[in-house]
Structures are given as structure tokens and as C-alpha cells.
Image (cartoon, protein in one colour):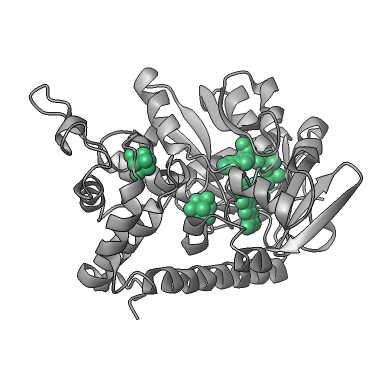
Amino acid sequence: MATIESRPAINVGDMVYAWTTEDKIAKKAECGGAVTGLLKYALSNKMVDAVLAIKKGQDIYDAVPTIITNPEELADTAGSLHCGTVLLAKVAQKFQESSPGRKLAVTVKGCDLMALHEIAKRDGVDLSKLLLIGVNCGGTVSPVKARSMIQDVYQINPDIVHKEEIDKGQFIIEYEGGHKGISIDELEEEGYGRRSNCRRCLYKVPRQADLACGNWGVIGEKAGKATFVEVCSGKGAELLQKAVKSGVIATAPADPKGIEIRKKVEGAMVKLGQKWRKKDFTSLKTDLWNKIAEETSRCIKCYSCIENCPVCMPVSGNGADTKSLMVEPGALPPSPMFHMRRFAHISDSCVNCGQCEELCAMDIPLALFSHAIRSEADTAFEPKLGRPDYSN
Ligand code: FAD
Ligand code: SF4
Ligand code: SF4
């Protein structure tokens, strides 16, 4: 085994298997615990002032965004919550607004990253003060839907489920007295499974982060016990190198066959996302405006979709409240223009994070409309970017 001093330097583009050397983290972690081990190293060694990650709350349906400043508390955030549909981008923005200049490490999925970049374009966040630890993402399941899916399809009381995982294409639950797995394809055919925006998502490996971490591609004796880490930036390389040197993270070269498998799975997931886009958008093609008018006629104007969108930032001018200018005051449901203005405003930048739809009090498929408009605009106006054409 190579001594620490004789280890080769870690560079951008490297792919390694990595795992924590701390038992407390390893026990709770999703696979190798590299993510939590790296976050803890960064916080303990003052590379950052705080960490933003997700912690399990009351149960597996309750994902709680948490700011941590005590490294000993980081083990509480280990493990993946697939019913955690929260977007951390706006929380990171709020952290920077309230603590200017302080450095924050954040665990990010693809949609968090895209949202952070859109917020940065609007000067809402300083990316240089963020350390971004990416996690691959096959998708999340809405907690409300997950409960009814477990009740109706698994025929198990959702309250007794204490663990869930996604493995080999199955959503698996563990409960008092047993466990049960059903293929995600099957669940989705029955109208359950991942959120519809996640099905259409093509950003599976978050390479705009400093490190992209996941379980795809970990094979052989390390399967389930190591994290596959792709080094995506100099900052990421420095963090991994230092953590390995200090002994809190151990690594081994990624198996070339594992690298190949990961590439194939990523490709298959992107194709599946394209298939879902085609399916969802084709049904809207001839009737988008009528569908928007029909669905939004349930709107109670709670403003949740506006408040939670990472891209929509209405700014007030001359002291006026922009929201009140959006549509005739007091009218319910509001005119479809209440929604059309937002769709138009974000048509070049909707990141398909799904927050508008997930948090809509009236279950209006807002992300579907907004994503369809964004994709249509990309296809029509930016074909040079080589984006796939979903229009036929
Ligand atoms: P840990 O040390 O256990 O740390 C996990 C980190 O993830 C913690 O920082 C925690 O706060 C954070 N986290 C937990 N739940 C969420 C959430 N809902 N949203 C944001 N952050 C969260 N890897 C793949 O290779 N393929 C996949 O299809 C895939 N799908 C995933 C779907 C979801 C919703 C999540 C959260 C992760 C997914 N991953 C996927 C990544 C994988 O599950 C592990 O997170 C990754 O391999 C790191 O493992 P670890 O043991 O180092 O992480
Ligand atoms: Fe994951 Fe994409 Fe869904 Fe975000 S939109 S939770 S990155 S699948
Ligand atoms: Fe209307 Fe739903 Fe938006 Fe609330 S979240 S304003 S109900 S569309």
C-alpha cells in the first residue's frame, strides 16, 4: 500500500473510490460516507465556516435543511433521503445574505447547482464563497405521494417504514418485520415513483460542483462501501487531497469496469429523461394555453410558487409591491396572466427543480408548463447549443 507521502496528487478529472475512516459516519452513510467525511474535514479545518446539508427529521418523509457549525454534528446528516424534495439553493442564498463573507459548504443535486448558477447570474449568490459537494441524482419522490404509494401499492402502513433506498432500479422500503422492493418503472406506470420534473431531468452527475459523488460504478468488494468520486475542480481536488493526507478519507483507484458501467447508467438515465420529456411535452403541444387556463383556474393565489422559485425574482420599483402589480387585486382565481407573466419571466432560465409544483397548495402542474415553455424556447431560439429537439 502506498504511504501518504508517496500517493500521487489528486487532479481535476480523476475518478476514485473513497470512504470515511470514521465509524460513526460510516454507520449512517449511504455508501462510503465520503461526502460527510469531506464536509467534516472542510469544517474542522476552517476551509468553510458552516455546512448546509439535509438531516432526517420526524421520519423518512421529513428532510430538514440544516446549517451546521459544529463538526461533531455532521454525522447526523449522513445518508440519502429520497423523499427529500427540498432545494438548497435559496437556503444558501439566504445564508450569504445574513452572513456576508462567510464560507459555506453545501451538498448539492443537479437542480441545486443549476439554481445556484441562475441566482449567481442575478448577483444573488457569490459562488466563490461556496464549496459544492455534488451528489448524483436519479430523482426524488414527493413525500406526500410516497406515503400514498407505500399504503396503496406496497400495502404497508407508511408510519412503520423506517428506511428507504433506491437500488438496481427498485424503490425499497424497510419496516418493522420486513422489507419490500418494487421497480421504479412499474411504480411510474401506475402514476407513483419519482416527481414528474425528476423524470424529465437530464442532470444526473453534477459536474459543475467541486466534486461529484455517487454510488454508480462502485463494483467488486467495495460495492456499497465506497463512494464514487469524480474530481471536478481545483477546489475539489484540494479538499480531497488534504482529507486523504490527514487520514479521514481513504481512496482507491476506481475500477475501469466500474467507470464504464457508471457512464452507461448515466447515458441510460439521460435517454429515459428525454423519453419522459417527449411524452409529457407532446401531450401539451397542441393545447398548452388552454391547459394552463384550465389547470390554473384552481389557483388560490397563495404566492408559494413565486416565493419558492429560485429563478423568479420580482423586484419592486419606486417602492411599489411588485406582487400586487401582477394581477387585479382581490380576484380569485386570478387571471391566467398571473401565471403567464411568471412563465414568460423565467422562460429562458427555468431549471426544472419542481419547487413550484411540489409546493403548490392546489396541485397545479406548474413545473410541467414552465419546463415545456423553457424547452420549446431552447429548441426554437438556441438550436446551436445542440440541445435535443423534443418537439416531435
Ligand atoms: P453520505 O456521507 O451518506 O452523505 C449524504 C449527503 O447527502 C449528506 O450530506 C446529506 O445531507 C445529503 N442528502 C441526503 N438527502 C438529500 C436530499 N434529498 N437532497 C440533497 N441532499 C441530500 N447516486 C448515484 O450514483 N445514482 C443515483 O441515482 C443517485 N440518486 C440519488 C438521489 C438522491 C435524492 C440523493 C440524495 C442521492 C442520490 N445519489 C445517487 C447519491 C448517493 O445516494 C450518495 O449520496 C452518494 O453516493 C454519496 O454517498 P456517501 O455515503 O458519501 O454520502
Ligand atoms: Fe434530482 Fe434532477 Fe429531480 Fe433535482 S430535478 S431532485 S437533480 S432528478
Ligand atoms: Fe396558485 Fe399554486 Fe402558485 Fe399558490 S402555488 S399561487 S395556488 S399556482
